[in-house]
Amino acid sequence: MIRFDNRVAIVTGAGIGLGRSHALGLAARGAKVVVNDLGVDASGVGCSSAAANAVVDEIEALGGEAFANGADVSNSEQVINMINQTMQRWGRIDILVNNAGILRDKSFAKMSFDDFSKVVDVHLTGSANCCHSVWPIMQEQKYGRIVLTSSASGLYGNFGQSNYGAAKAAMVGLMNVLHHEGVRDDIRVNTLAPSAATRMTHNLVPETALDLLAPEKITPGLLYLVSEDSPTKTILSAGAGCFAQTRIFETEGIMIQGDVTPETVAQNWKNITDPAGQTEIPDAFTQTRKYAKRAAEAYDIKLNW
Ligand code: NAD
Image (cartoon, rainbow, N blue to C red; front, side, top):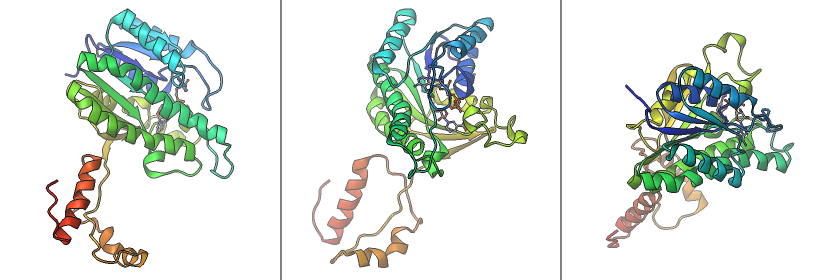
């Protein structure tokens, strides 16, 4: 049985949609929950504490413990205040679910740079901000579970979402590095790529699929990602009760000896992109060593690396 008794969790953007479902799911299994939400509309305009307060009421009515916090995740001062408030109240932070998000969709040609920056600010800077503030606490505790929220738009692409897609793909980069930096202190960092019927996907999901794609179908996956026995450095894609792992592979590739030109690259394209023998590369320098070793072998150079 996965439980979160004596664990303290912060869920950002937890007033509605996926965040609300995650907050309720954590509280139902014993976690004390900070229900963070700025209370903006889908494009990031406005400010209201009503939704976050309502989630706190729901948790308390079920016998759980929670409080609402209205920090804007992209504002470091407000995030630090939220972290301080949590530490004063409960003395630790075990789980951080970076979920808050907005959309400002337009084709790249028509998008203002303000709209590009604003979306990157909320998703990427906002998530990094929250991670940065809880990091020393989790290091000290020698325990932490962090989830970043990505999207199929970033992993696979979607017309009209260059700002959102770039920010959501950046979650994978942030996870990859935080995994390496957190592993010795048992801080595990994972990424959730959800697909749900919420206000964000309003008008994109047919009426018949609304129940199938309920946020509650995704939360069990999130709960596993923040549990004691969670994996780390994993992208879990989820929706409608379906769960799959998204992975990045590198093909075995080839070593071009002698004169390397754009033409020799083009001539070898089939072999360069051949998926046979492709692998996951665990860290950046494993790739550098792979290349250097292959070249050293080809040129009969002793590398000792
Ligand atoms: P939603 O619009 O229903 O909820 C987002 C919540 O985030 C809102 O309550 C909003 O007030 C809050 N928020 C926005 N900016 C904030 C800020 N700066 N600080 C604090 N709170 C802020 O969205 P959702 O569909 O539940 O999405 C949740 C997350 O999942 C987002 O990161 C989204 O990008 C991601 N996602 C959703 C889907 C989907 O199918 N719904 C798909 C892929 C990724």
